Image (cartoon, rainbow, N blue to C red; front, side):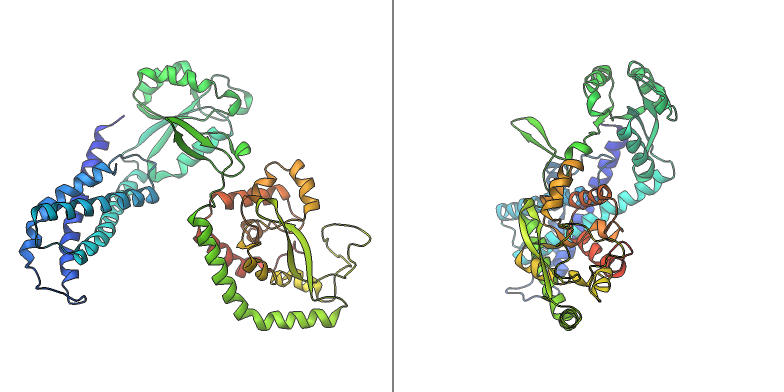
Length: 463
């Protein structure tokens, strides 16, 4: 449904875009011929640049419209805005270059067009963010509200209500919940009616958006909701209740006109893999150079305080469940598991060497894993690798445990820096690991590394 206020907002953004492009066009002229760059031929007069502004502005409006920049909706975020602009500006540059060639315009040069492209992206984005900042400012203060209703009263419905309430910049106001089968568990919610009452409630509360938040075992009721809303012009969104089924992330795509929802797909693919790998190699190489004196000192202390090798090798499972030999500084006796078999370390463990407790408490025993990172067995950040014998147990007792093997394991991770390490809840660790996998980006990795240095090295649960 296209509302008048959305049309007004689209028109305002379009006006700001063409004005921003005009500023970028003039700015590109002064930047190109400012003397910072060599000029192979005589500098064109400013009038040639100014004469082309009306055509450039018209092409800007057309290019942004063709790339769907003006499909306004409240859930739009910065990344969608950036992607839209990055589609519109290249098309604008191509159209402008084509028009200049057709009209045999002597002004346009490759240097000026390159400067124009960069300035257009920057200025248009700044203009749009200022516009959205103003809109969000007003929405937080009660202006331009959009009233919503939520279908369902379960976990997903409650989470949706909380999210809408906290995202005040969107301007959503939930008037209540719709439930055909209320129970005592939903008595704390503001249930305003049933599905049958929806048309009347939409008119009464001027509802703009309907969120269907039904559990998977009631998914068939969504069809009933659509039938009831068939005569009403409201936006309808389906909030999928599949976190326990998905395990990693949700993706949507279209195949031959059919919508396909991916429930088990890792977001680490393509360029993402290379970005993470380059970060690992560069940062680990730097760390090895800086920490080499410390590594040498620990190796000497391990050798002097107990019999046996300096390094401890142990089979662990990483990406896709494949095993590798993980390195650590040895912190226990050589025969530590001879009598007990594979077990976790516990508080007061008498198998530790004289400096083993200190190494484990400070995580200094993990430093040799930098070599595993260089080999490609591990990453700096990721779910901690586990031993195969424990994996066989956890995969059948902990839901979605194997989903953590969709990415490389790490020396540190989101679970570890939040305190879930050592003898703590495995389910909580899995929850944090899956959160990391879904929300991964390079900045998230850097944040975890920073938190590891300042918060995660020494921990009371590390034995």
